[in-house]
Image (spheres, rainbow, N blue to C red):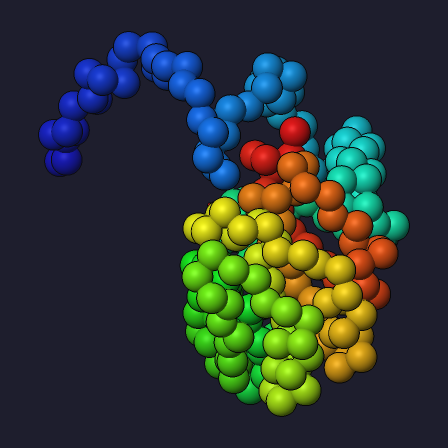
Amino acid sequence: MSAISVPPPKCLQKPLVVPHRHMFGPGPSNVPPRILEAGANPVIGHMHPEIFEIMSDIKSGIQYMFQTQNKVTLAVSGTGHTAMECAIFNTVEPGDSVLAAVNGIWGERAADMAERIGARVNTIVAPPGGCLTIEDIEKALSKHRPVLLFLAHGESSTGVLHPLDGIGKLCHKYNCLFLVDCVASIGGAPVYMDQQGPDVFGFSRCSVWD
Ligand SMILES: Cc1ncc(COP(=O)(O)O)c(C=O)c1O
């Protein structure tokens, strides 16, 4: 007969104490009390009518934040990496050409993800702490003819905010989707998704949304 040989841990028998800390990096970040209180709401099921209203309100908030009227605007419950994978895995097929603008680690990370699903990945690399020009991007688009261009808007590893104007239009000209990583920039710098190009789509994570 089996018996419990690992006793319940003593550390879990006392209340959890998490200290207050001021965090000023791109993440994790401090969460306002209004958001913490929302987390204490009762759990309801994913088919309860109220959840549809809540999800629809969240959608309106995201549309406002990204300045888009795109109906396919949704909250993915997960980290920035989850959203990156979700965006790349749903737009790229094995063998597709993908272009990653690399101006820090996030372009490299996107290139790795696309490589893992068997895409043909090319990169355009900006000088350390710098940005790419529209000319650099057009040259690479015309050479590699990608289905997707990835660019980190707020490149948290270098602190560079990459301009977005004109790139969406360029991608449209080359029949390429434009994926913008706004994890570290949204809420701090404006993003005008509908105006910045017809095929722009971006992602962020909720911890920086407030
Ligand atoms: C620009 C950028 N993209 C993506 C991520 C990944 O987000 P997460 O840590 O929530 O997976 C980060 C995280 O710092 C980031 O700064």
